[in-house]
Image (cartoon, rainbow, N blue to C red; front, side):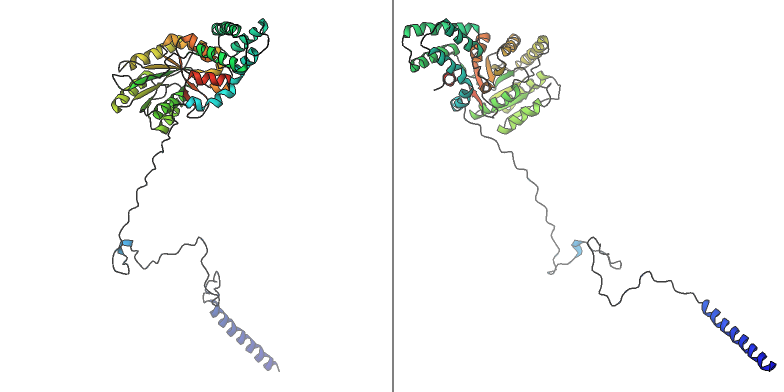
Length: 401
C-alpha cells in the first residue's frame, strides 16, 4: 500500500516538473507590441477632411510645368499678365462765370432781403417823420453800410422823397435801387487782371487772415479762370498752416491746374518764386499765389508779404493783389483790411460767406475804407459759388422783386 502511494507522489512531482519546463520555454519568446489601433479591414477607405494635405510621392522626381507634355506634344507658352493701368483722374468742368451771380441770385436774396425789404417798408409809411428816418439809418448801420455812406444815402433819399411827392411801391423800389447803385458804384472796373499785354503769365497774389476762406477762395478762383478758358499754376506759399498745400493741390487737381509747393514751414517767398518760374516754363496764362495769413504782429506779416512780393517781382510785376474778407465779420473785417492795405497794395477785394449774413452793406463799407472795388463774392460752400461781382444783380437781390 505504501509502495502505491509513493509511486503516485513521484508521478505527480514528475508531471509538475515537466509542465513547468514547457511553460518556462513559452515565456522566453518575446511578445509583439500591441497595435495602437486595430484597422477594420471591412470598413471603406476614410474620406480626406478639409485641410488635409496630399502627401507627395517620394519615389518620383517632381517635374516643372515646362517638362510636362501637353496632349499635342507642344510645350506651354508663358502668358504675361497685362500691366495694371490706372484710370486718369476725371477733370471737372466748372460752371461758366458769365451770369453766375444772376444764377445765384436766389441764394443771395434769401439772406439779403432783410435790408432791402426793411428799407422799403419804412419808406412806404404815410408820414416820414424824424423817428422813421432814424430807423432807416439804424437799418443801414446794422447792415454794416458804414456811418458816412449811411448818411449820404439817407440825405439822398430825403431829397428824392420830398421831390417825388407820391410814393407808390414801384416808385420807391426804383428810387432805392438807383441810390444803392450809386453807393455800390457802377463805374468801377471790377475785372480780375490776369492777362497782361506784354507777357505771360499773369500773376495774382491772394492775401487774407487765416479762417476767411483764403485757400479755398484761391482754389475756386482757379476754377473761375479755367471756366473762362485759362490755364493755371497754383503756388502754395502758405507753408505755415498744416494741410494748406494739400488743400490747394486738391482744388488744382480737380480742374487740371499744376500746384507748386515746398516743405512744411519752409520759405513762402521761395515757393512763390518757383511757382512763377514753372508757370513761365509751362507757358500757362495765370499763376495764383496763396500766402500765409498770420496776424500775430503787423511787423512780421509786413516782412513776410513784402518779401514774397519782392521775390515774385524779380520775374514780373504783380497784376493783382486780392484781399479775401469774411463778410460775416462785419466791421471787424475792416480792421483786418486796413492792416493788409498797409502791408501790400491791394487791388481788389473778395468777400466770402456773403450768403450767410444779412449784412450786405459791408460791400459798400469795405470799398469806401480801402478805395478798391469788390471784384468777387463767395455765396456758399459749393465749388462754383464764387462769382464775379455785378452791382446791378447784387442790388436787385438786396431789394427783392
